[in-house]
Length: 184
View 1 (cartoon, rainbow, N blue to C red):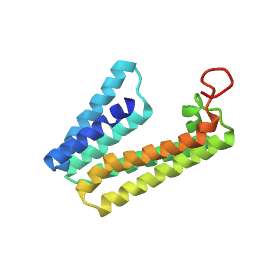
View 2 (cartoon, one colour):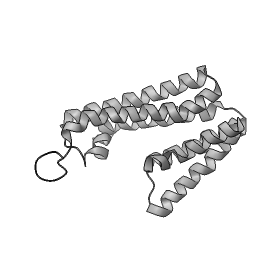
View 3 (cartoon, rainbow, N blue to C red):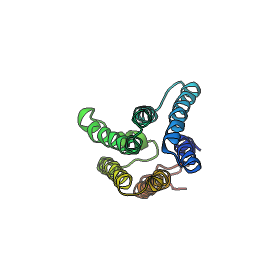
View 4 (cartoon, one colour):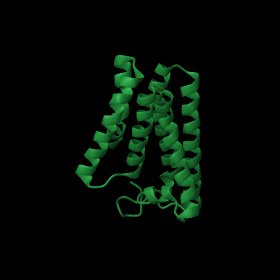
C-alpha cells in the first residue's frame, strides 16, 4: 500500500499526460500532488521521510522551471537528479558518516555480514547511477509519450526487479521469525 502511495503523484502525472497529451498540464498536476502528499505525511506522522522531501523539492524546482520556461527537459531530468542524489548519499555516507545506509534501512530483518552490506550498498549506488543514465537516454532518444510511460512502468519495473534480486541475496540472512531457530 505504501508503494502505491509513494507513486501517487507519478500516477497522476502519467494519467494527466495520457488524458491531455500535454506535458505542461501534467507537470502542473504533479506539483500540487507532491506537495499534498508531503503535507499528508507530515500531518499523519509528524515527520517526513528524507527521500519524499528531496523528491518533492525536485518536483517543485524542476517542475517549476518546466512551466516557467516552457521547457519539458527539466521535468524529464527529475528522475535522474533524484537517482543521482540517492547514489551520492549512499556512496558518501560510509566515507563521511561511517555509516552504511542500506544496512541501517534493512538490518532489522536481516543479519548479514559486513561484506554483504558493503556489497549491497555499492550495488545500490551503481543501480541508481544506471537508472539516472537510463532515464536520460530514454528522455533524449524517444518520444515524450514513450518517456512518460517509461517513467511509471519502466523505472518502477526496474526498481522492483532490483529489489527482488536483493531479497534473493539476503534470503539466507533472514532473521528467524518464529524464535525457534528454524526458518518458517
